[in-house]
Length: 481
Image: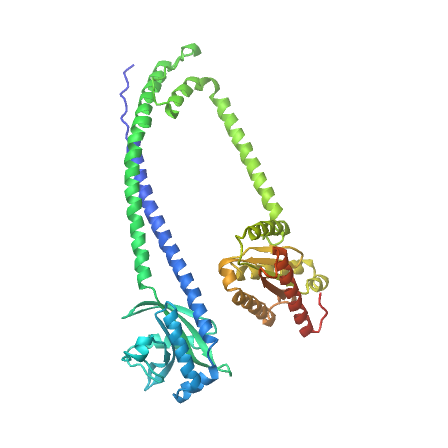
């Protein structure tokens, strides 16, 4: 028999590992860069939207709409107009904003233009360097293109705050626009806040490229050290083991006597898995099948037990109808919050109590399936409204929301959105009776003077919910239930 030629390795391990490391570094750069950019950008815009919203609502509360609407109509300043202008100047001085102004889009000589009403200025620009200040009735010429003005015309009929980016000669701004309505609900102007995001965007880009550079540098160092270690501890010992296995295969080919199948493992000083592998090959013909079968069986049993334990834990804390957390999960959360409260780690939080109206009537008149639909629909509305807060179903028709952080800061706006959502369902004539979900809501914030425990806050929220339900039922001429 002719001696077989030793086949050369067409895909050496070191080359595959090198390619894999380079690809991993490249993929990591892309993923980390995109993720960092998106996270920074999302955090930026969420923060500025909340910041702009607070400023717009704060200024809006100080506006006498009828008086300001009359000033816009007559182009004559009033006493309240002067007070509002000073107030807006103070806001611009005190808050980190680029511009704060009130304007209205107009049609002049067949073209779309912008008319200035109030433009907040710093003390220096208002009283010292007044050149370039905008006054009541100032009409733009070519400062705004018609596409921008037409866009502002559409914003005049928006009830909610509109956010958009603007790139101008003065920089890059993120703008929030709130439509102002007079007492007859006629839109007459736009209250706008501009926040300069030029430097922030540049900073995000800089940090992203710095992250790229750091990942590439560390990746190259890691690849070099890893390849060096692989050569000494893995690839070279494996090559020696391969030679011994090849000799064993050639020697044992065609042999019938098991006693002749003696494997001679190479001498290794690595004291790692490769040396263990050499020992394991020596015993492979005797017990490998049973060993592998035992390992597989043990892994399957362990995985099944782990999965079963996970499922049991989820079932213990999950409401079977809605899929949200149940009364047991709520009680555990309250105990944890009570501990944090006693330790002084929890100061700002609130509890909202929500109760579905007319569940018994729906069950009696339409059936329990429709009642379950109403419960799940209310749960969906609650979860979509209080996105960043845990929601619990603690009774048949009772839900609790624990508010902290961002939801806590704008809770009354969220409650208004919640009631508006229910109002829209009630007015939708295409919905069936049980689909027009109605609910009462009560909210209470923790006050150290009033509340000795988390339960005290819950009780006050429950009482306010009951009062809301009583008021709703009174309007409908029904008894509170």
